[in-house]
Length: 76
Image (cartoon, rainbow, N blue to C red; front, side, top):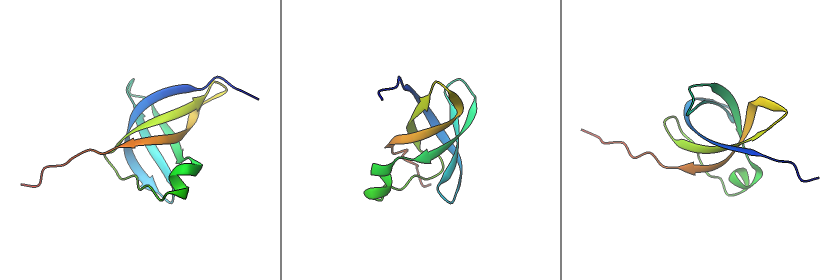
């Protein structure tokens, strides 16, 4: 029941219908989707946001986005 999860940080590159392309810290690009609680509480993820992703050791190409950190942009 309890699996070992791999937690990594990344940056959102693209977004399309709840599916996100995320670049990890080691420059790999994976597919991410929102976790259930993020959908439930309607947390929006936009391009450029830093996110925490949970990966399964069995599939390192897809991950669940579990946390979002805002990236503040300066408007000149």
